[in-house]
Image (tube, rainbow, N blue to C red; front, side, top):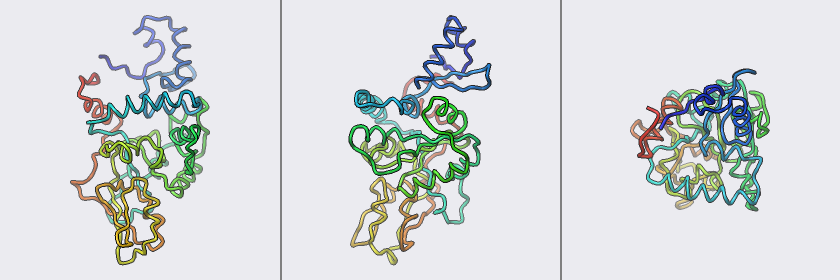
Amino acid sequence: MEHCPPSIISIIAERTEQDGQKLGQTLYDMSKRGLILRFIASEEVIYYFLAPWVVGIWEFQVNRLNKENIPLYEKFHQEGIVASARGKTVGGFRVIPVEQEITDDKEIQPYEQVSTIIEANTKFAVAGCICRKESEIMGDKCDKLLEACMTFGFAADYYIENGMAREISKEEAKQVLLKPEEDGLVHCSSNHQGEKIFICNCCGCHCKALAYITKHDMPGLIAQSDYYASVDADTCEGCETCTDRCQVDAIEMIDKIAAVTVESCIGCGLCVSTCPTGSMSMVHKKPDALYHIFADDNDLMQARAKDTGKAFPFE
């Protein structure tokens, strides 16, 4: 199988032996429907390339959701995406902790900082969360923030051009990220170093990514942050704020004192940021407990493809 990298219309037309003008219109129409990706390098040069289902084609249907197509998307997700994920070991999502709650003396890695992701970009957009929007349409409204999914760079351009998101400034982007933390949403992005093109803000009740932990018993497919929550039992007053904030049920009350199941903790920091007695803190994991972070998007893509057990076409 041949790998098809992002290509301009003339290259695709030559490869497929089609008329360039007609093909250009077809590709543009497909990209407007969210079926393939489009990157406009200039007025004369447009690149087109394939999009995955998640993060990709499914999210791009955010403005086309209705009670007729949502059950179809859900059926495909359960019978296709979730079923095919069983037995796999490489996930694409990584949890990013609440930055201000990291207070230890170890160097904070750039991929653990939403501020670094924001500062590295110049184009920003915010869109509605498709997970929570689907649920709301189907009568199961989530009480957490809806407009919470952020895209950057060319992905922001694509979302804005297709009417799926509104453009925001860098300062607005920083403010947008504060609200999910207040609401108890988990920051997630792609599990690789370097440039990021999105940050999702996920709830434990409806999010498809966290569902691998909360519903499907496949926790290894979501890379935890480099931290875990810890409780000072001497100062904990048993208010249960942390248990309400935890999106993956990693905290329970034992003898009216909060207790963290370290293996289940994803290291998001939501419990720490609202603890009224300051009894919760973030602890850096030991080196042998850290989840692998891939070098870049291509490194992650190769690892995920090899994880399928099929002949991998990209080498």
